[in-house]
Length: 76
Image 1 (tube, helix red, strand yellow):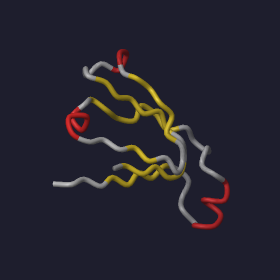
Image 2 (cartoon, one colour):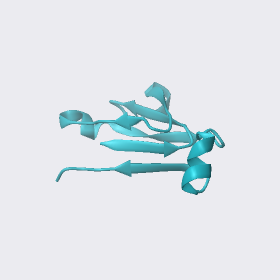
Image 3 (cartoon, helix red, strand yellow):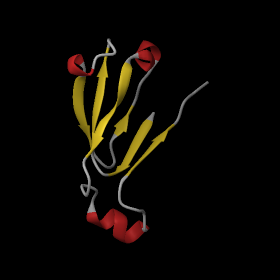
């Protein structure tokens, strides 16, 4: 389980380690991504972060630094 907080980012995933063949989705602040079973082993990662896209209230009310924070929880 992965929680995204802050700036949006382009997330890539696919069955091959080829960026050009990977599927792309936009992860925004507050999005949750869940991998389970065999999907945990697919190629995946962030290709780039879109600066200054976090909700304005997030930085003002929490005093978080600008940028992106990802919290990932894994079951062993």
